[in-house]
Image (cartoon, rainbow, N blue to C red; front, side, top):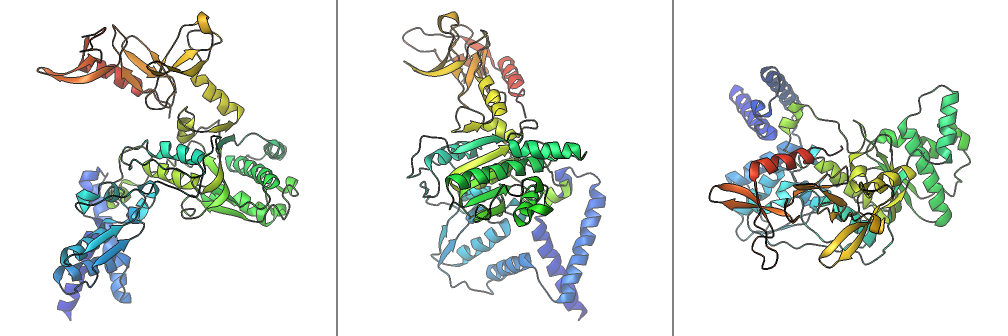
Length: 499
């Protein structure tokens, strides 16, 4: 009996070792690693004891035990053709199970369907790189890209495609929509605009109460619902947010206006207006759709979007590492939320506490309709000419490609180049050209003699910057720059982004 118990404990310890992925506490720079290690060991011991007492196994046990059965040959897989849906959310434990089935089954064929742009389940063990670096984990494969969408129009496809592919880890895709529309269908709005906001703000001031941003967001959503229903009475409308607390005021209002913060405007929405209205979090919205979507919570701060809530180092050590691009999973959440709409998406943001994502999409390369005087001013400032008083830059097509020119005409001869990252004007300085968009600030090296772009080259004595005019038949340029010196200047300007 004791031998049996010891063997079970040993098996359980091996399984938990696999579950934790052998995190290696010291590798994650965890403070007080001995204390946390002791705490985790006690937690595992008590958890295993509870499972033993209940004669139960958990989900990971099922996966890991099944993997061991196939690996040892106890179970012979009868499946020759394996189809995996939602592959982008697969964990390493489930991947190992699949690999063992393939290894032990002669002529086994694996077919995986997944969208790396919608990989939003890192908290449950999902690892993006299993999809984007499939050959490293599985082996050789044939890739088929599905690049046609029938849900939303070309305007939404253009905007979300540019945004999600800013992360180099994501697959490059050129998504096309049969519904081609040159008008922008992604709208940016100010949560502090509108009559509903003014009514609520005045009421809270009189009552000497704090007016939370969530109420400002909800008040704008109510106005939008009314406007949409006036134009399209039978349309379905979804209100989405990163967190449930942003949706609570709306839920209360739709159920019973008298018990909500919006009792002063209780007749603002009719019973007919309230039909076909959905309220989802970004996570829950995956796989769902509506004619119009209203996205709330785009502000900075800990509970804004993107979320700045960080896990404890101990929890991070137990989960698969994410790709290093800033807010990578939050970006994919934004993609999921924005693509729930068939017709139009409305982004409700706070200009007084700006979101990193809003700052990013306030850029020429995004097909955006700015319905806010504050955000419109912020966008317009990107194009203000710094060399004259009244001029603004406009994009024109030249003989050698697009460039900007000042609207002041002959008074101002400024002609900045186009930023290769965001498409905004890029102002030339002596040795570099810097993007005028404060959320981009992309800098490139330029030739101090002829103004052409400099490129990194390898010489017999190491790296150096060389002019792209080198080797040209007409007007050649052989100017070079010291690698380390120019690199420091570029690094300095790239650090001046506004986040």
